[in-house]
Each structure stands twice: as C-alpha cells, then as structure tokens.
Length: 46
Image 1 (cartoon, rainbow, N blue to C red):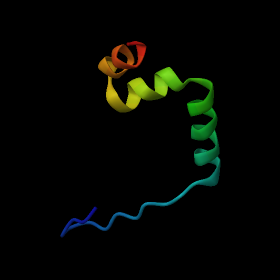
Image 2 (image 1 turned 45 degrees about the vertical axis):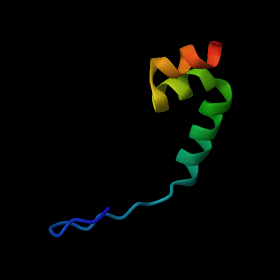
Image 3 (image 1 turned 45 degrees about the horizontal axis):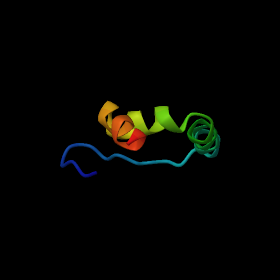
C-alpha cells in the first residue's frame, strides 16, 4: 500500500498468526465464507 500522504507499515504479529491458523483449522467453512462469501460454501457442497 502506498499513499502520497501517509506511510503504512504492515507488521506481522506472531500471536495473531497463531490465532488465525487455529481459527482456519477449527472452522474451515467460516473461513471460506469470510474470504469468498456465502456462494463459496454452496460451491464447496456440490
């Protein structure tokens, strides 16, 4: 990301990465919906 007015630094947070990995493994359907919407769930059921 670049803006002529602001600098944005993207930082990696080890705890956040760990929590998200756990969420993805425990709730893969919800993760898919979050990323691709409800239609993705319908496609994966087919």
